[in-house]
Structure formats: C-alpha cells, structure tokens
Amino acid sequence: TIGSPLVGALLDKIGARYCSVIVFLASAASYAILASSTTLSHLFYSKLAATLQAGFLVAQAGVAAATATAPPAVRAAALGRLTTAYTIGATVGPTVGGYLGTTGDLYRGARLAVGVSLLSALLSLGLPKGTWVRKDSEKTATGVWRSFEIARRPNVRGLLLVKVLGSVASSMFGTTYPLVLTLDLGLTAQTLGFFMSASSIAVAILGAFGMAPLVGFYGPKRLARYGLAARAGLVLLFSALVDYAADAFGTEQVLAHRTTYVCHALVLHALAAHVLATSLTTQTTGLVAADEQGGLLGL
Image 1 (tube, rainbow, N blue to C red):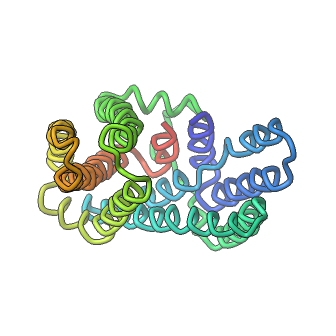
Image 2: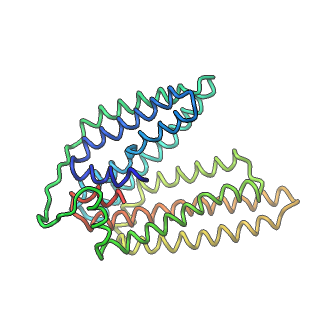
Image 3: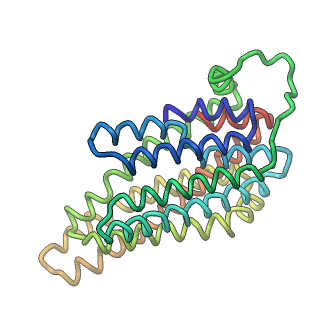
C-alpha cells in the first residue's frame, strides 16, 4: 500500500519496462531475505524490500497506457485478461509453494521464488519502453504529489471515492465470510477452499472472455452501476442465505444443502466485484493521459 504511489510515480517517469525490472528485482530481494531468514526480525526485513513489489500495478499501468486511445471495450478486454493471468498465477503459486513445503524444506518455495523473480526481471527487458510524451506542458506536480493532483480532478475524484468505499466494503466482506462459513455453518476448510477456487476460476473466465462484450454492450459507466448494485444485492442475499442455512442446524443433510446456496452466492459476488472493479478502472484510466496512468493507478 505504501509503495503503490511510489511505484506509480516511477512508472510515469521511466515507463513500464524499467519499472517492471525494478519491482521484480525488489521481489527477488524480498524472497532472498525470506529464504535466508533465521529470526522473526529477518521476516520483517523481507517486507521492506516488498514495498516496491507491485508487479500487477505496473502491468495495469502498461496496459492502460497502451490502450489509452482505444475504445473502452478494448481497454476492458485487456484489463480483464490481465486479471485472468494474475488469477492463474495466484492459484498456481500457492499450490506449488504448498507442495514444496511438504518436502520438509520450508525455504525451497522462497528460493524458487527468487529465481522466478529474476527471470521475470530479465523478461521485462523485452517490454515496450513506454516513455510517455506529456501532453500538457502546464502540469507542474511531479512524483507522488502528481497522484494527489490527479485525485483532486472533478472527473476523477468521484470514481476514486467509489473505489475507496468499495474496497473498504470488499475487505470487510472478505474478512468476514470465511469466519461465517466455517464457525457459524461448520463448513470444512477443504469445502471452503473449493468454493474460493471456484470463485477465482469464474473471475478468470469472465475476465478473459466476458468483460469486452459487456463493456461494449452496456458501456463502462452503466456496467459499473450494474456491478455495484449486483454486489450490494448479493451481500444482502448472502446474509439472508446464511440465516436460512443456520435454521437447519441439527439436520446435517439440510444444512449442507442450504450451505451450498450460500457458497453459490459467494461465487456470484466475486463476479459482480470483478465487473465493478474492471468497469471503474476502465473509466478512470480513460480520463487521464498516457503519462498519468501510473500516478492514477498508484492511488
């Protein structure tokens, strides 16, 4: 969180290629410290290097800048496919790390992450340089301050406020629902993990194939409203279904059957959240120049 504005400002200065190299070298440094840590303080030191570990932010800014003049549907498709790639990596990575941890050496995963990060830094050199040409010579704010200057613009600040409030609500829901499902409804960790994976897969499929047609048909502004309404409605539905399932306590088969309804609502909520997030990002990135994408997304 602290490093995002810094990386965003750096993006607008040096472009996606070199910024991607920097963030992956920071990742390699973080994992290297983790792989050699012997005390709790060393674990905290590894988080210092992770301040610049913002690969997804760099990728988002690069995609947004490359599609700055493209129609919203094209930009939404690119951002959606980026989310798909990130989701696949976020699913495969913990699986591989968990498997390596079962071999008896808990540091093997961290050492492998060092090598993968260094390889990613090397591959980043093949990205477009991405040196933006500033369109407005009167822009005086630089660095992190430029992000705040962008946030104060009338056409941007409303959308950013929605993103902030939506992120707070999403974090609260994300923290609460696993506790509700496991502690109140008795869902096993294995079943919870299955539905969480199902949510990730559904989001990946929607990002790869669904966002472009949706944005092209409804437009990003209208689709964001639908996504916001759907997410709010699904939270209410989730709460109602939890109460409905809780009424079946004492009857295992009925409880298990009703709990599946709760989990299906969870998957639908993940889809609605992705629609809202991608629509808002499509809108906001379309409101600033190519050389301001990093500063905007760093917020």
